[in-house]
Length: 79
Image (cartoon, rainbow, N blue to C red):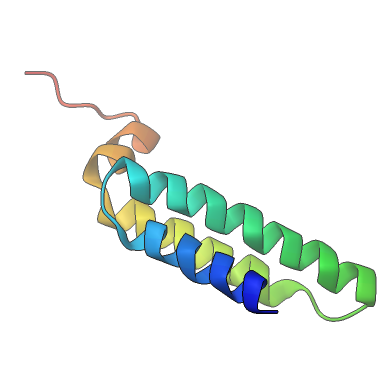
């Protein structure tokens, strides 16, 4: 359990760092939560909580990073 918790804290720290490392942290956090969903489905537990946390993580990243938000919305500013 210690190793799993350590990986989760490390991924959360990467998520908090702004810029490209934050994007990488968001991807890793999504992958980690995907594993949690699969584990919950396999055991028969409710699996919606990791999905909600992943959606909140991406929402937070999109709101935090203006360049990524503009890339997603496709309204790049031309100088």
